[in-house]
Image 1 (cartoon, rainbow, N blue to C red):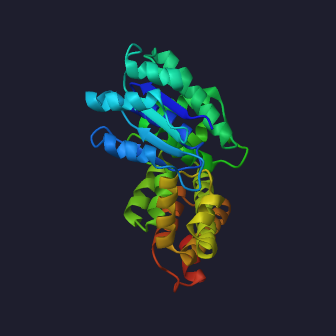
Image 2: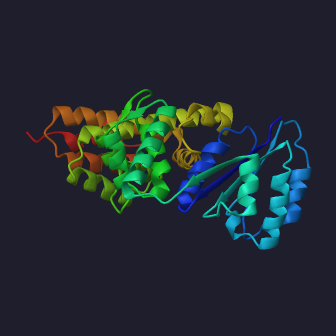
Image 3: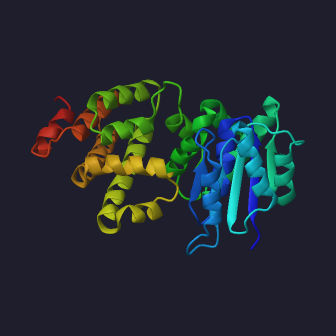
Length: 330
């Protein structure tokens, strides 16, 4: 079996993280990660010398090797000259001269990915290409113009998490549009539809009311807002059903587009909200859509009433008493 050894060099921490994550996803084994602050040669070689059990290889990661003490670099150099054939080793660095012995040792036995300083337009082109590739790998599409708009809209550190939100929003094989980005990916102090659905699931009435009013005030279509909420509560209802029968593993399989951190958050909110409320919320959204189509009611008022109904336990309220809120005066 051939050993795998890669060194990722990039001044941007998020770029290093993204490149490393894309490589670790290909591995069937979980990674043991070493950081410069706590790195120990004895711990590293203990992992190296322990063959994997029931797996073909073991994955080790050493972050920011350029920050390691010189003695640690020397010990790592000796390993890189004669790597174990059952170890997949990934190294990262902010910078490392190609003239160093460690660089040359990795180059001789493995692969080096070096992201050098870029011009602004080069960085934009690379990010655009990465976004389009990531979206295509998850069964959707996005134009270069829309990808560029997303780059401008979000911080680099949250780019992947924003993409995960957008991928969950679009249908399988669908396209991420500027409208979806406007609705979901607004990082700098501007409220989003995603924050609204989270506030509803958390039963945070005041926050949900503030976000709902702001979205309507900013010109977001009432039906686009209701459509998003309907999809979120349908996902919540599905997630709760799967949790009850198959557990978290089943949810991970059913929602492959969600990152582990985002999935954990959704499961926590869904569990707290509960399935009876989820089904009732879907009914209330349907009723609100019907009233918006049949009655001349201010969209902001409809959203406020919907939010209050979803976040308050009004099971004992009769259908007729709720309907009176919308009955036009004669």
